[in-house]
Amino acid sequence: SPPPPSSPPEPSPPPPRTPLACEEIKSLTNLRDLNPPEWCNFGPTSQQRKDDAATCESYYATVEPTADTGAGSFRIGLCEHEANTGKCKIFTEVTCPLPSPPPPSPPSTPPPPLMPQPSPPPLSPPLTPPSPICPAPLPPFSPPPPSPPPPSSPPPPVSPPPPSSPPEPSPPPPRTPLACEEIKSLTNLRDLNPPEWCNFGPTSQQRKDDAATCESYYATVEPTADTGAGSFRIGLCEHEANTGKCKIFTEVTCPLPSPPPPSPPSTPPPPLMPQPSPPPLSPPLTPPSPICPAPLPPFSPPPPSPPPPSSPPPPVSPPPPSS
Image (cartoon, rainbow, N blue to C red; front, side, top):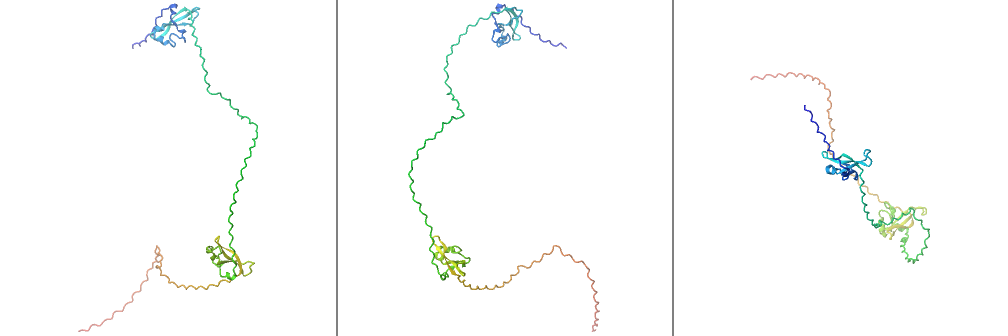
């Protein structure tokens, strides 16, 4: 098999830059004097040096002095551009005496004096200190001055006395006592059925409505010890017009009135005639026949019938006469 292709050779570094005289280096810019300090291939402005060879080779970088350079000398690295990689690197170093420090910068113009600024207006009135939590002590108590007496008001007018209520109606004058014989012409309410009183009972409304009807009645009161045996206290019915009532206002004592005559015997009702009994509505119902028929009696053969009696032979009739 053919041998594998060999890898491309590493790019050779650019030829070393011709050493410059220390006087010529003074025309270049030291990257370590920038702020911040940079290197040929590193720093904020390094991309400009990587992109352009002339820009790259216009810079150098001083290296710290070492023992082999001697006091007062620096190793200086010259920035050189590497075109095939696009880098700006140090390939050549020279030793030069310590360069003189840069001339001092001219004194900066002092800034103009600050004009006094007017003070701003106060934002808000100053805060008053907060009031203490406890209230201020009260002044000592002094009683208020006595108030002047109120002006005397005129006495109220005397109101007339209220009208007096009408007097209670007086009862009617007592009825002139009647003789016991006259009372017999009146009707005793206690003999009614049911018994009544002058102002109470089924017919009392008639007596309340009419004075004459009221005073045609009386009511006997049960006998008491002070009337004597066989005597009654009799209350006479009297009409009170202002109230429309029939009441007892006068009582008299009279002997026990004779009982009313017995009522004639009532005619007996006619005897009830016997009523004919109504015809029967329908024939009596026969009881329903049972569902199952009655059981038949046990079968027994009939007795043998006797033989019939033998009949006598018929009589022989005579032969008919010959002709």
